[in-house]
Length: 160
Image (cartoon, rainbow, N blue to C red):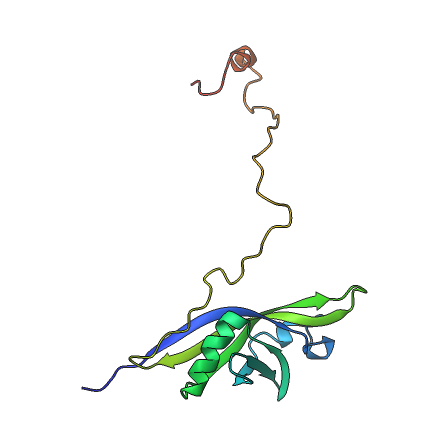
């Protein structure tokens, strides 16, 4: 019986200092979206992201190590840019980009799947833990006539 391969997809975000304004990240963000990048193994645990034959960045260590091992086994990947965001330096000049990639591959039976973080877009809040909502005051519509304002004045939390 033939082995059945499954097409698998994961998403990841990568910092790409090699992408600058000449690729349209600031002037025309849509110029990057939908473009195909190549994933190439550079060392035991690092995978380069190549755009137009130029290395523009690397996958993060957790995903990169898994992809590097898969490339060693002969696995091929297709990666498409689904979003891009500029990274600015301290002088507010574009110093690169963060790109969101949609990576597809064919998983043969018996091979391990790439375990990418499920919260790949998550970020840690600089403000600390979330605070409880503050109270506010507002008016109630429809209580101007028939003495309804007196009734509203006697209302309390949880009352009907």
